[in-house]
Amino acid sequence: MLKATIDADILKESIDAISALVTECRLHTDENGLSTRAVDTANVAMVSLTLKKEAFSAFESTKGEIGLDIAKLKNIFGMMGKNDLISLELPEDGHKLKVSFEGYRYSITLLDPNTIRKDPNPPNIDLPGKVVLSGNDLYNSIKAAAVVSDKIALGIDAAQQLFFMAAEGDTDHIRREFGKSEVNFLNGIEARSLFSLDYLKDMGRVMGRADEVEVSLGIDHPAKFAFYIAGGQGYVEYLLAPRIEAD
Amino acid sequence: MAIGKGAYLKAITSSRLGSSRILDRTMEGSTPPSVFVGSWNYPKVYAGPLIAPIREECGIMDTPEAWIPAGWSQEEILSCRLDLVRGKRVCDVTRVEDPDACRLQEIALSAGSVESQATFSETPAGTSLSEEHTPFGPSAHLVEFEAESSRFEPHLERCYYDSDLPASDAILALHREGVPFSSIQKALSVGALGTGGKRRMVPTRWSITACDTTLADRFLSRVRQNRLIDTVRVHEFSSLNNHYAVILLPTPWQYEWMEAFLHIRGDEELLFSDHEEFRGKKGYSCVGGCYYSCKMAVLEGLEREGVQAGAIVLREARKGYIPMGVFNVRENVRHAMLQPFREFEDLPSALADVSMRMTFPMERFVTESTVLKSQFRARQTTLDAFF
Image (tube, rainbow over all chains, first blue to last red; front, side):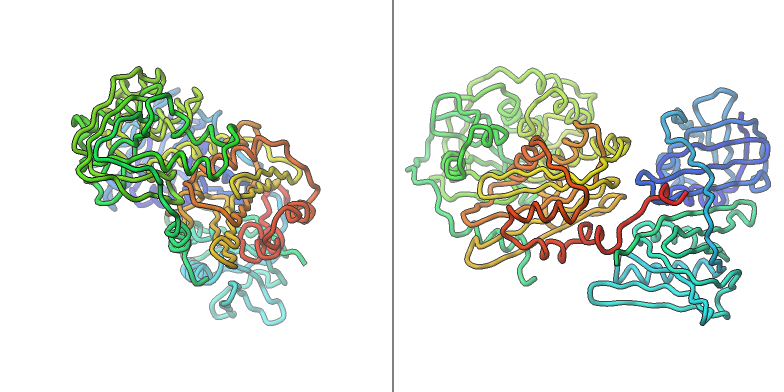
């Protein structure tokens, strides 16, 4: 059973964070809020999202699992006004989620969770290099890199205490460095890995709205991007597998 | 690269001669059955039947699926296709219930060749050769056209009368029932498929890519659930002055299509390519419809075998090659996927093996590639490699 009311903007922000990587997911509900963890079909990137009940203006739920067609839900967003209040309702053992706002009443048929990929295990991975920077700076450098290449290197120069992004195209390259005035070094240890911009562009669009993004890196290891949404009441983590350069 | 693919293919085809058959303004013969819907002036397009000057079963003339198994040479295909005369008349694509449109639907749905008579406003002239559609001979405006009534192919007939069946579902069902691709595409093109009220005539070229894409998307959603292959596999096939190598990688689905045109006009060597990574392609491919035909053929094979792989397809078109439409790519790649594969431990040994049957240097394929090169320079890993 789920009965909740939420601001349209918060709902959109949360769904956008998931839809950057997957088109369907298993959404877990309990008395404290919602959560999901999903891996994209190629097993390259993962999204974890939690939305506390405080993110809602009203929230009441029992423990359950919903199969959500993200693409379908996104189609409805066009109808929602920015500050509309959205009410979500799912009866006990129901297979249709009722979404109502401004006089509209949608009934969305849910997916059978068993037909959706199982939740991946929580990642247990050591990524020692950690920096915090503004989401906007991060997204802008991703966009800049995409002009010259399809991949980007993210790294930390420990000696100089710099966080850098570099992209090499066939003929052009671009590099952006961030010093201590722009980046907070939680652990400025040497790190460098290469990532696909195809994924980062979609993730960046979501991260660009966050005040702060914590980036965790290793050497030829995945990157983790963690940030708050919904005014601090929601939390998103992206994990992206690297591309490995041959010698 | 100084020349685009479209301009290059136009240059190859412009020097070819047409049919030598002497034509009149009236014609009696049969349609294989075959129809052609042009894209020029859309949505008021030129559409009409293709008619052969013979009065016997001639279905093979418009069934490209049968040409490679029948062992036809490029010259045989061309001479048979150039005998087809295209009658045309302006049709509004939305008016699928007009008598002209209905007559084209009857032709496209029929189970065999249909005896026809046509009167043209002028003597048919010219030929049409293109990378996108199969070649045909002279064309002229239709004044009158009559076709014998004929029996419908039963699978097509069922979809035609089911006006609740969306076109994409019809395409998938017909393919599953073993109806040839060319018949499904013709039915879509004449506006015989789709939910009532939404049916449209679709220009031949667009309908080919629409069918390829509809099938490929469905195969891909299944293939993505399959286990990855665990070695590098190579399927190869050669015909009609073309050599094809399908290299399957033990990665999630990603796809690169590379085609080299060698010494066809003179001493030129041109390479065109396009690719998509794990997340698919946005927008239309810069190399045209063959990108989608090849993708469909590879995914059809992967789905049949119940596996998932990344695919790099190398094509070499050699001296003597004439563009004859994307069927050439689709049927050759389908045949390649049906050949037993050779297995390799790694990509370099697979490429070394393939390069023995290629004229174009493998290094140039690699240098100008994206997905292929990334296997050497910056291979995408997956998350399960880390925890």
